[in-house]
Figure 1 (cartoon, one colour):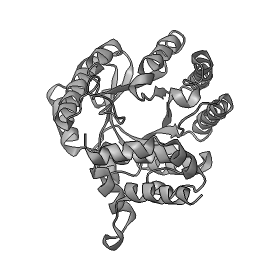
Figure 2 (cartoon, helix red, strand yellow):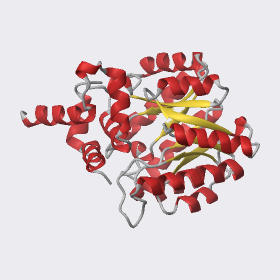
Figure 3 (tube, helix red, strand yellow):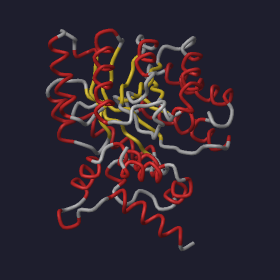
Length: 323
């Protein structure tokens, strides 16, 4: 694991920096990858994507929730997003993190918050995707999914390819709509692959398995080599396009997103919004060194090109050190 990835992961998990970033709004490049700070701004961004044939999954950003009041506020915000999707007839669904809704506070409290969200979404025929976080939250998150699946069928989740147990999880949940990702957290060697090539191989293996055996596959990657591989695999195995979609993050590889949508593939953009942007932004920069270049190319001219994540971290550290 590279020093660059370690550095940005360290920044993403710094509670002081996350808290400080909320006071300054979207700065230092984050406005290119976060679709506003409130529901109104987010809705306008989603409408623009829908106009060009791209669906979205909406993430109300949130980190380090350890107070019930904050988790309740997040619950109400997501319920507001569900209403906004319904009222504006958006081609959209929800992605959420159980930790934002109280998983680190009390399991039962979190379960009830999620039940309220899933029930409301079910009423409007809106899909809810459970994002998976670090290994310590993996099992309780799956426990909640198992519990809510007894009542509702509008639930799916994420399989992270860097975990050794990902194939086992994929097989267990193959009848769910699944998003397959490489993984965005720093995990130890006894739990997860560390080498990029190992992760890529497992990523492709999982994608192929779910395309052949699963319900619906969301393939989350910016890597055009993997995208081309999936296109060829789907054609060779007569997998209909209705069974899968490509997903990318808001603000990244916009031309490729539009190209895939124009080619007739289902395409979904992961649209984050909110004031709690810092941890999300740093993890995106940690995931792949190329993301630094992708953001920089879209935000700056050649004269002002810079390492955005490093600047963000240094800026916040400098501001806070003067307090």
